[in-house]
Picture: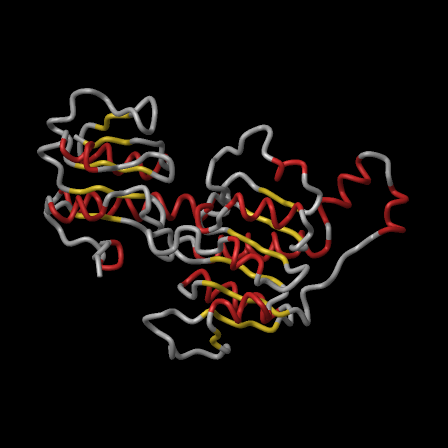
Amino acid sequence: MILLLESLHPEAEALLAKAGLVLRAADPNDPPAELARVRAILTRGRGRIGEALLARCPALAVIARAGAGLDNLDTAAAARRGIVVIHAPGANSNTVAEHTLALMLDLARGITRGARAVAAGRWEERAHYRGDELGGLTLGIVGFGRIGQRVATLAAAFGMHVRVATHPSRPDAPGPYPRLPLRELLASSDVVTLHVPLTPATKDLLGAAELAGMKPGALLVNTARGALIDMHALRSALARGALGGFAADVLDVEPPRPDDPLLAAENVLLTPHVASLTAATYRTLCRFTAENVVRVLRGETPEPRSVFRSA
């Protein structure tokens, strides 16, 4: 028996259906009562697979997320119980990187802001246009995994000067771009983009002190996880004009509250966590995850990169 906390691409669901009876949760975080025969649980970004849920599934062999990040899965609890953890690292690298560049372009050039003005009949606002091209700006990348590397390649093609934040455990990591300590990177970058996983060590990675240390008027982009930023501190920085703008596909609270001041800010651009949801990437993420879950259930060896192994 296989439990789906959230829907997947139809092709992925068909693969799972051939491997066993599929149960569907009406709510991603409210699974059915009877789970004794469940051998696999799959989710995307909303459904949480924690220790309490694992304890209700004595036959469980594998849990999975159709995505790269695993902050909604208790991987430590799974390891203690000998449960395999499957995910899809790298499958969304290109589409998230493209979305990141799209947000940068929009924020720097004021594309959405200008389009709204035209739609409202305010063509004359072109006389007050404020925008800049990406070429020549310094981009600071925090997190240099597959997505960060792809962002660097795209940004360099636009003529941006790319810099990367050093990692405490890999201060001399090789690569074509200068490595800087985080504080130095923030202070010298015109645009900063986040591409690190959410862990206890990275939660609120950018707090009040880090935001205050950013270059005045800098742009901040986040397509990783909302909780990487202290959002109270971010709202304060935007309100006092310390930042030039903020664009994100992720927030600490999704969806945002209707009274969130970010929704009314002219220099803020938010998209509804869709960076990975292009048709091609969504299909790839879901199929890859389902295929490797099925391999585990059949006693076969899953693709090595699909298996999460804690450090």
